[in-house]
Length: 99
Figure 1 (cartoon, rainbow, N blue to C red):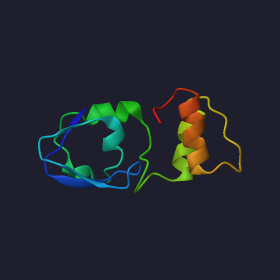
Figure 2: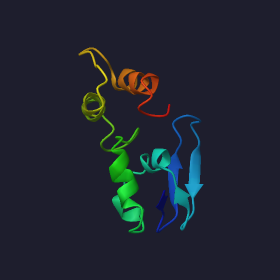
Figure 3: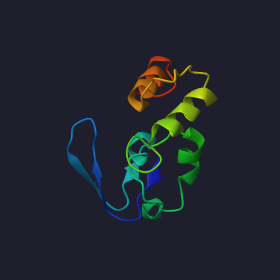
Figure 4: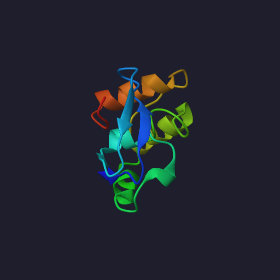
């Protein structure tokens, strides 16, 4: 878990809603991946995100290439025609990530 140093607004891609996360909130890795600004975090918890290595699902660094590399690093096959969402689905089906 990471701790926010400031209040942020995050777009939840699953619900389509904007969520307000207040300063001092503990944020899980999946939600943290949606926050592209590294300056919003307190110093603690940086290791958690680095350990997971999962690319963000939105914003900077969330493109197909990042997800393809992540899949390859975890032994999940990716076809040339697979889109980013296909790769994420394959990773979820392989149990590498939570959907």
